[in-house]
Length: 170
Image (cartoon, rainbow, N blue to C red; front, side, top):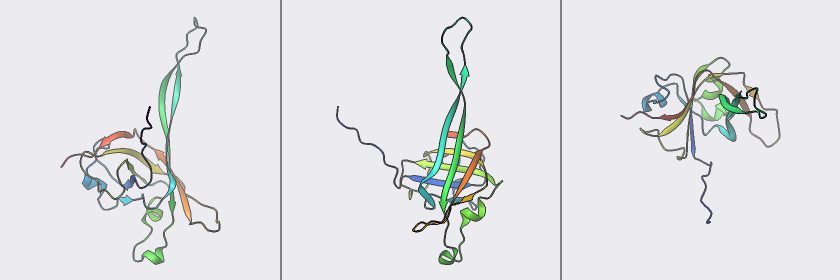
């Protein structure tokens, strides 16, 4: 059997914070690019996008059985971001939008698109993951030589995510 080519992560993610969305299963390009939406992929560290799923189990065993049996139950997600702090003097008059916007209690939507170059604009029919989330308390990284300043932000999933969302057509 010949070796099959694999997909790489590098440069293949677009991650956006979207403050409001009408339908998470089919967001529009206008929602994904509206005022208040923040593109995060160039600020997230290479290993800083966490969206790990874990499934609960439902015990389906019976008294008459000698085996324990299970079925899949609820799924929960642990979603987090580790972002680089931006040098606001160097980017003035802009600010570090992610740091100043994504504070404890802030609600919105984390949108993740993979398998297309990060620079590719959002367009109809692209597949996405959309997580309705609330920001937790950000943690600043401990100081270290030869490293950028970063902060980690836990995101609490507040509703059912759309794991197979598709951008709505024109």
